[in-house]
Image 1 (cartoon, rainbow, N blue to C red):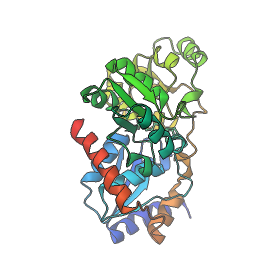
Image 2 (cartoon, rainbow, N blue to C red):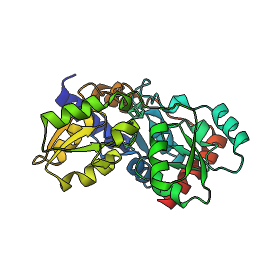
Image 3 (cartoon, rainbow, N blue to C red):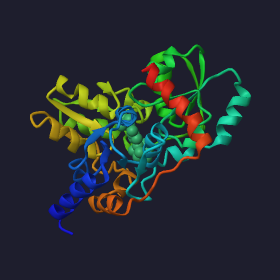
Length: 302
Ligand code: 13P
Ligand code: SF4
């Protein structure tokens, strides 16, 4: 089907189903352009609490769609493609958490929302990259079990002075791990006037070179502080920023920083999702109830 026709059909089906399309900032431009709400993980979780629709089509990766379902158990949540998964979230298992808890029984378990519902059910509180330092600083403990992103854990330890016990020992995002000091050097040579905006999932040595370390939502909020940026995160973020701020220059730090899970969703998938009401996101009731407490605590604390 032609792009225009697809958009027409999506608009028609959205009305028919009383549906809303929520999308993450890393989605393909064609998907970003048809979204009713675009945001970072925290903004999407917040929005999910107050959705005034019967159906949420979630264009993002599975843990984000699960979070929307956990916060809206009575609504239908659809994820348009089966392959839309977060490799980092899948690195953390229940076993990792139970083992860490055995060793540090008094330490709270703080999980990045980039985690499965099953592991979230064991968390005291969840965090996103937008609020991790704030939430951890408010916890009444100097030692915190934190996962699955070791680099975000490093950032939180630096900001709060607390001891972070990483679960698993080496959890990471393969997209953000691509960025190196060579990319920083190249960026500085090519764009001497530019400042660097860096996602906290990047390696500590790259974080050290940043002008600002921020979530994707933070990138949007703080971009107007300067007129030229090199962007150290998934490449589609540049599309999002450039569309919002046509008068500011944005350069991707690497063209190949692509999240395969995020790119699994196309306009055609969104159309088929609404047409066939697939793929329904389900979270077992008991898991969802426990995970909801950890997510709601985050929303209260940030
Ligand atoms: P944000 O919450 O900053 O959008 O990050 C989500 C994510 O998956 C980053 O890789
Ligand atoms: Fe997960 Fe990394 Fe993709 Fe974000 S960019 S969804 S952390 S794999």
